Length: 188
Image (spheres, rainbow, N blue to C red):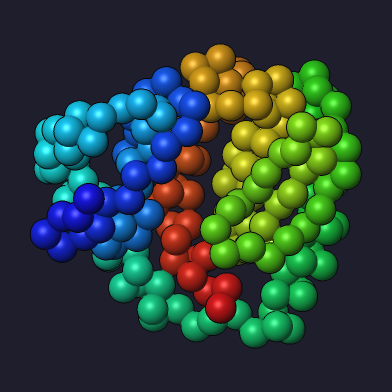
Protein backbone atom coordinates (compact mmCIF):
# COMPACT_ATOMS: atom_id res chain seq x y z
CA UNK A 1 0.00 0.00 0.00
CA UNK A 2 1.32 3.46 -0.80
CA UNK A 3 0.09 7.01 -0.13
CA UNK A 4 0.82 10.26 -1.97
CA UNK A 5 3.84 11.35 0.06
CA UNK A 6 4.31 8.41 2.37
CA UNK A 7 4.54 4.64 2.35
CA UNK A 8 2.12 2.43 4.25
CA UNK A 9 3.62 -0.85 5.43
CA UNK A 10 1.38 -3.62 6.77
CA UNK A 11 2.64 -5.88 9.55
CA UNK A 12 0.36 -8.80 10.30
CA UNK A 13 0.37 -10.71 13.57
CA UNK A 14 -1.93 -12.51 15.97
CA UNK A 15 -3.26 -9.27 17.37
CA UNK A 16 -6.96 -8.51 17.69
CA UNK A 17 -7.10 -4.89 16.50
CA UNK A 18 -5.66 -2.67 13.80
CA UNK A 19 -3.14 -0.08 14.98
CA UNK A 20 -1.44 2.77 13.14
CA UNK A 21 2.09 3.88 13.96
CA UNK A 22 4.05 6.74 12.44
CA UNK A 23 7.53 5.35 11.94
CA UNK A 24 9.10 8.40 10.28
CA UNK A 25 8.08 11.40 8.19
CA UNK A 26 7.37 9.12 5.24
CA UNK A 27 6.44 5.73 6.71
CA UNK A 28 3.19 4.60 8.35
CA UNK A 29 3.03 1.13 9.88
CA UNK A 30 -0.34 -0.60 9.94
CA UNK A 31 -0.33 -3.41 12.49
CA UNK A 32 -3.18 -5.75 11.67
CA UNK A 33 -4.66 -9.12 12.60
CA UNK A 34 -3.61 -11.92 10.25
CA UNK A 35 -6.88 -12.17 8.33
CA UNK A 36 -7.89 -8.52 7.96
CA UNK A 37 -8.69 -7.90 4.27
CA UNK A 38 -6.53 -5.34 2.45
CA UNK A 39 -9.73 -3.48 1.51
CA UNK A 40 -10.49 -3.00 5.22
CA UNK A 41 -6.96 -1.73 5.87
CA UNK A 42 -7.27 0.73 2.96
CA UNK A 43 -10.57 1.98 4.42
CA UNK A 44 -9.01 2.50 7.86
CA UNK A 45 -6.00 4.35 6.42
CA UNK A 46 -8.31 6.58 4.35
CA UNK A 47 -10.51 7.24 7.38
CA UNK A 48 -7.48 8.20 9.48
CA UNK A 49 -5.83 10.27 6.73
CA UNK A 50 -6.09 13.57 8.61
CA UNK A 51 -4.55 12.03 11.77
CA UNK A 52 -1.80 10.38 9.71
CA UNK A 53 -0.88 13.59 7.90
CA UNK A 54 -0.82 15.58 11.14
CA UNK A 55 1.57 13.08 12.74
CA UNK A 56 3.72 12.78 9.60
CA UNK A 57 4.20 16.56 9.70
CA UNK A 58 5.13 16.34 13.37
CA UNK A 59 7.65 13.57 12.58
CA UNK A 60 9.12 15.72 9.80
CA UNK A 61 9.57 18.64 12.23
CA UNK A 62 11.25 16.36 14.75
CA UNK A 63 13.56 14.92 12.09
CA UNK A 64 14.48 18.45 11.00
CA UNK A 65 15.22 19.45 14.60
CA UNK A 66 17.33 16.32 15.03
CA UNK A 67 19.46 17.31 12.05
CA UNK A 68 20.59 20.36 14.00
CA UNK A 69 21.83 18.37 17.00
CA UNK A 70 25.34 17.02 16.63
CA UNK A 71 25.83 13.25 16.66
CA UNK A 72 27.28 11.92 19.90
CA UNK A 73 30.92 10.91 19.84
CA UNK A 74 31.95 7.44 21.03
CA UNK A 75 33.48 9.11 24.11
CA UNK A 76 30.19 10.90 24.91
CA UNK A 77 28.25 7.64 24.52
CA UNK A 78 30.67 5.84 26.87
CA UNK A 79 30.31 8.67 29.41
CA UNK A 80 26.50 8.50 29.22
CA UNK A 81 26.61 4.72 29.65
CA UNK A 82 28.90 5.01 32.69
CA UNK A 83 26.58 7.62 34.22
CA UNK A 84 23.54 5.43 33.50
CA UNK A 85 25.17 2.40 35.19
CA UNK A 86 25.38 4.44 38.38
CA UNK A 87 21.98 6.08 38.06
CA UNK A 88 19.60 3.24 37.18
CA UNK A 89 20.14 0.53 39.83
CA UNK A 90 19.03 2.60 42.86
CA UNK A 91 16.09 4.14 40.97
CA UNK A 92 14.95 0.71 39.70
CA UNK A 93 15.20 -0.69 43.25
CA UNK A 94 13.11 2.21 44.58
CA UNK A 95 10.35 1.87 41.98
CA UNK A 96 10.38 -1.96 42.06
CA UNK A 97 9.64 -1.84 45.78
CA UNK A 98 6.93 0.75 45.19
CA UNK A 99 5.34 -1.40 42.45
CA UNK A 100 5.80 -4.63 44.39
CA UNK A 101 7.77 -6.39 41.64
CA UNK A 102 11.10 -8.15 41.32
CA UNK A 103 13.55 -7.86 38.44
CA UNK A 104 16.71 -9.51 37.14
CA UNK A 105 19.75 -7.91 35.54
CA UNK A 106 19.94 -4.25 34.56
CA UNK A 107 21.78 -3.62 31.31
CA UNK A 108 22.64 -0.25 29.76
CA UNK A 109 22.64 -0.13 25.97
CA UNK A 110 23.15 2.49 23.30
CA UNK A 111 20.16 1.97 21.04
CA UNK A 112 18.75 3.89 18.10
CA UNK A 113 15.07 3.00 18.55
CA UNK A 114 14.21 1.94 22.12
CA UNK A 115 14.30 3.63 25.49
CA UNK A 116 13.98 0.45 27.49
CA UNK A 117 12.75 -3.12 27.53
CA UNK A 118 11.84 -5.89 29.95
CA UNK A 119 12.40 -9.56 29.15
CA UNK A 120 10.10 -12.37 30.26
CA UNK A 121 12.82 -13.31 32.78
CA UNK A 122 12.61 -9.82 34.28
CA UNK A 123 15.87 -8.46 32.91
CA UNK A 124 15.73 -4.73 32.25
CA UNK A 125 17.50 -2.80 29.49
CA UNK A 126 17.80 0.98 29.43
CA UNK A 127 19.12 3.26 26.72
CA UNK A 128 22.11 5.36 27.84
CA UNK A 129 20.53 8.32 25.99
CA UNK A 130 18.01 8.53 28.83
CA UNK A 131 20.74 10.41 30.67
CA UNK A 132 20.04 13.31 28.26
CA UNK A 133 16.41 13.38 29.48
CA UNK A 134 15.08 15.04 32.62
CA UNK A 135 15.03 12.73 35.69
CA UNK A 136 11.22 12.49 35.67
CA UNK A 137 11.38 11.05 32.14
CA UNK A 138 13.95 8.46 33.20
CA UNK A 139 11.65 7.53 36.08
CA UNK A 140 8.75 7.11 33.65
CA UNK A 141 10.77 4.64 31.55
CA UNK A 142 11.81 2.73 34.68
CA UNK A 143 8.20 2.46 35.89
CA UNK A 144 7.01 1.54 32.39
CA UNK A 145 9.47 -1.36 32.19
CA UNK A 146 8.83 -2.52 35.75
CA UNK A 147 5.08 -2.60 35.10
CA UNK A 148 5.80 -5.13 32.37
CA UNK A 149 6.68 -7.47 35.26
CA UNK A 150 2.93 -7.44 35.97
CA UNK A 151 1.61 -7.16 32.41
CA UNK A 152 3.81 -8.11 29.43
CA UNK A 153 1.70 -5.99 27.07
CA UNK A 154 0.28 -2.49 26.72
CA UNK A 155 -3.26 -3.34 27.82
CA UNK A 156 -5.54 -1.14 29.92
CA UNK A 157 -4.38 -3.15 32.96
CA UNK A 158 -0.76 -2.32 32.14
CA UNK A 159 -1.46 1.42 31.87
CA UNK A 160 -3.47 1.29 35.12
CA UNK A 161 -0.35 -0.11 36.86
CA UNK A 162 1.81 2.65 35.37
CA UNK A 163 -0.72 5.26 36.52
CA UNK A 164 -0.86 3.75 40.01
CA UNK A 165 2.89 4.37 40.33
CA UNK A 166 3.10 7.62 38.33
CA UNK A 167 -0.26 9.44 38.22
CA UNK A 168 1.19 12.01 35.76
CA UNK A 169 2.72 9.42 33.41
CA UNK A 170 0.79 10.80 30.42
CA UNK A 171 2.70 14.11 30.51
CA UNK A 172 6.00 12.27 30.85
CA UNK A 173 5.12 9.92 28.01
CA UNK A 174 4.13 12.92 25.86
CA UNK A 175 7.48 14.61 26.57
CA UNK A 176 9.31 11.50 25.41
CA UNK A 177 7.19 11.22 22.25
CA UNK A 178 7.72 14.91 21.47
CA UNK A 179 11.45 15.11 22.21
CA UNK A 180 12.71 11.55 22.05
CA UNK A 181 13.24 11.22 18.30
CA UNK A 182 15.67 14.14 18.25
CA UNK A 183 17.69 12.51 21.04
CA UNK A 184 17.68 9.08 19.40
CA UNK A 185 18.84 10.64 16.13
CA UNK A 186 22.08 11.65 17.88
CA UNK A 187 23.09 7.98 17.99
CA UNK A 188 24.79 7.65 14.61
